[in-house]
Image 1 (cartoon, rainbow, N blue to C red):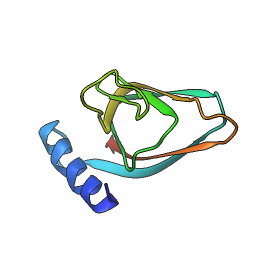
Image 2: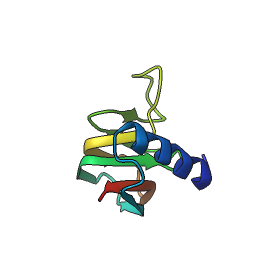
Image 3: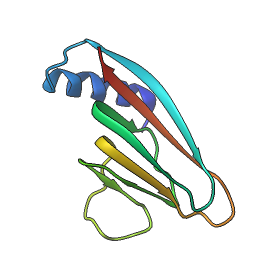
Image 4: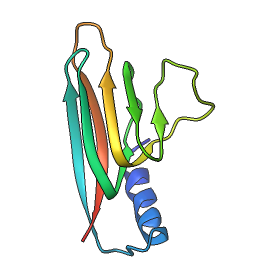
Length: 104
């Protein structure tokens, strides 16, 4: 998924969520070391994964993403609420890139 598609998607979703064009966009690049975990408080925000990433599990109130497991018939790129990102990469860091929309 390229960034132009993500930005257009966010524009439409923020209108659907009642924010119109009253939001700021941030590019978020999260680096996780092997076996680490991070929790992000993203209530009232929209986080969209820009590209698929391997050896990472992303769980949020509205989505699940993990390329290595067959726990779901569909993987979500959109996340809100508490976003939990876990790395299970062996001996390397993983890079997870999002576009974050924060209502004004």
